[in-house]
Each structure stands twice: as C-alpha cells, then as structure tokens.
Image (cartoon, rainbow, N blue to C red):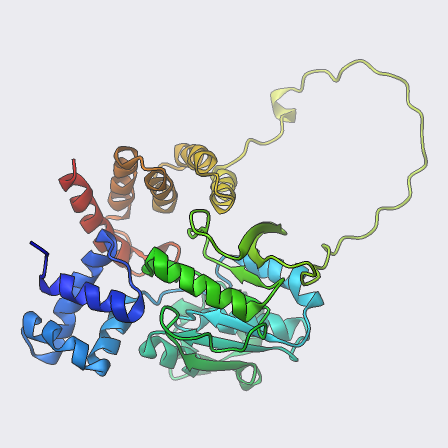
Length: 398
C-alpha cells in the first residue's frame, strides 16, 4: 500500500511544486516543519496538509521553513578568489546570478568584490524560492554574529550600525536586484547568455535528479557558451549529464559550458621572474639525509581536507575517501571532516562504512553551540536533527 501519511503527502507536493527530492534526511526535517507549521496555523497536521495544495501562501510558508538559509560572507573563499582573480578581469559588463541567495550573504559578498575591483559596470541578480529569506536578503541587515567571513576593513567600509546590528551601505545596494524565483519550475530570470557567471551553491541538494537536469539546462542557457557555474563543495555533477564540464580555476573548481570561444580567463597575477644567467655547476653527490629539524613540515588535517574536497569536485570519490580518512586521523573530533568522509563513503555505496562516521559527527556535536556552522552552511542544531533521523533510517535498514 502506498504511504500516504501527512509527511508523504507534503513531500509529494513539494516535489511537484518545488522539485524537492524525497530523501530520509530531508524527510526528517519536513516532519518537524509540518508540525511547527500546523501548530502556527492552529490546525491538526492532517487538516493542514490536506489544504496545502489549494493554499499557495501556506505552501510558500512551508517552503520557507524547510529550506535552510544559514550562510556566511565570502563562504568558500577560494571560489571568490578564483572569481575575482581569473574571471572578473576579463568579464564584459554583465549580470552575475546568485541563484538560491538565501539570506543574502552571497550576493552582498559579490557586490563587495565588484566594488573592490572597480567593476561597478556589472550587476547582480539575487533570487530564492523562500520569500522570507529574500526579504531578509533585500533588507541587508545582519546581527554581528552573522558577519563572519568579513574582515574588519570590509565591515567598516561596507556596513553601518543599524537597529542593534549592521546593514549594507547604500553604495552596494545599487549593484544588487532581488527576485523571487523557483529554480525547479520557473524559466531562468535572465535572457539567454545574459549573465555569464552563476553561483548556485548548496541548492541542488534539495532537488531530484530530474529536476537538477532541468535546472542545469536552464542555467547553462542563461550563462551561455563559455559561461561559468559555481556549485557548493559538497555538490558534484559527475553522475548527471549536462552541458557543463568541470575545470580547474585557481585553487578551486568551476563548471563551464562547452564553447569554441570561451570567456577568456585572466592568468594569475604573478610578477615575471628576473632573468637568470646560465651557470654550469659541477655534478655533486646526492644531498645528505636531512636531520629531523630540517624535515619539511608534515601535511595537517586542513591539507587533507582540501585534497578530499578537490577529489570530490573532480569525481574521484575513492581519492576523496583516502584524503578525508587522513584528515579524520589527524583531527578525530572534527564533525565537519567526519561528515565529509561519511558522505563520500555513502556516495560510493558503502553505507556500513558511512554509518559510524555519521554517528561520530553527531556525537562530536553533542553539547556544541546550536548556532555554530559545522558543515556547508548547516548549523549544529540543523545537523543534529538531520543526522538523528538519518541514522535511525540507516540502522533500520540493517
């Protein structure tokens, strides 16, 4: 018999209207959000769900609850460095699309990057399916704890005190436009080839494979031949056909639409080496073995974590697992590393291998500040709830 519980009905509706995939982790979050939403409306959960399909406002409020809107300024800094160093110098006056902009830290970070590089001839289109998040992003007001990722200089230059927090200065506001948009169902909010670069990070995790294919096709049309797409570090297109190809850009990876005449990429800004006279040196015996004090420093956990993320982006999941294991060995109490390893193992189909790492991540977060970001924008509060349900599902499948 088909499961028609309130959660199943709501999940089907969210899949139909917003492209949300049916995943045990997201289902657990949906269960809690439905209870909260029904309580807020003063209804029994069955009655609330039965009326969702005919009530667009209630459905939108549920979407606002389900989607996670935590982020930080200049999140995944390597991507911003690659964008400003390698792409921005050669871009024409264009639109940058921040798709799934959440509470606005990403588009405002892009605006800061444009201003710092004197590229105010470009504009940013920020869109999101959540009307609540979009209103916050448009307001541009943040509590002090939400300004993480900003240097003191950037905070001083681009934010001013307001109502107990900080708001973006007027000079940035003219660079960003906001628009409500459903990536899974709506046509792209820009004409074909009009935006050249799109940031769509940590959005695809909500969508089914079929919806992701549609999103990728629309984004590829929007950025045009040679255009670029930045995804979150935990997202990969290796198993899905699309017009995008993975390429290295600085110290990170980006997806680019195939083109015979791609957007030119600026070379790294390095000074030209000084000419060196050719000197003939005599053959010498091999260098003597270094003493312990002369040995090069061993790689640390961050080094292996970065190698694992690079391998993941390059679709090398076996290599990612090896790197994440080394990082976990060096830093066994890091929940973020444990999660990277767990997700990599799960992607390889090794559920039994992933389970203890999901459990270690959950145990490591016990007692931690509920608002602290641990993994790809997820706070400890969000992750504890998701992992508890995920482990319950995994343990039930043994």
